[in-house]
Image 1 (cartoon, rainbow, N blue to C red):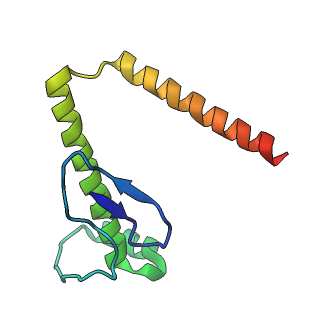
Image 2 (tube, rainbow, N blue to C red):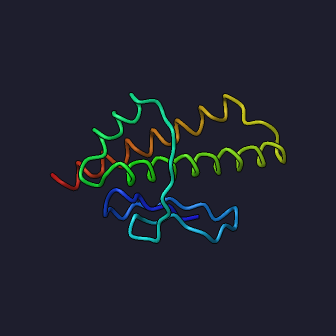
Length: 115
């Protein structure tokens, strides 16, 4: 699945090819359907304030797209853990250390090249 943030023109795309999903969530310029939803008033007002010029519908669509991506990732993790066993805290911490070092190296080399 390819999910592009419908609230901006940035090139950021999240992909999940593991599921073989052919559909995509693109932008508010795609054909749309009007829905009526119910949510707490304070949540709706906070979303309206944050939605800016793109509007509440685009803001909600982006939030739902992010949730779908999270749901897909959680399903992928469940399948992987069923096949290979649960991920241990030690494995999680090892991966976090790898990512932290990669970020530090990336930021360090971009500072060096900018100098």
